[in-house]
Length: 121
Image (tube, rainbow, N blue to C red; front, side, top):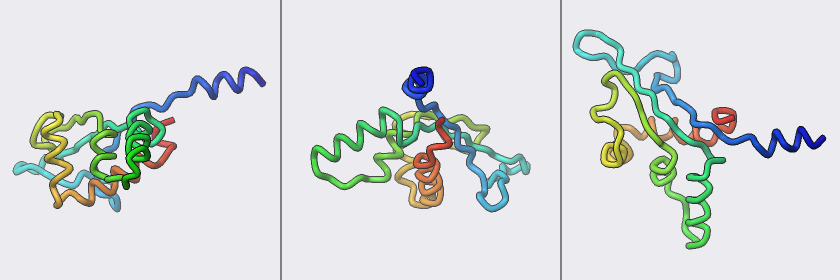
């Protein structure tokens, strides 16, 4: 029994990669001028991560409501791509992504990914 408790205690959430694709087809969404498919990979931590838990603790102490953009800001830890994103990952580029209303569909998909525990264990 103690080995089970030990393995559970030592289980830590991992970083998960979200592949930006059309949810219906599973294919990349965009192409460049030459027809090359542009793919984006976003690295995230989930709701069991220190970043997420710290945010929830902060807003609980202040008795505030959660802000989905702040959740994404704290949980997106990087991205890699072949041209899908216009800039390399940085705090400024992340803020631009989160403030782009045309990407609300992506924000929703990322939140679903963050809340799905299976993506991180």
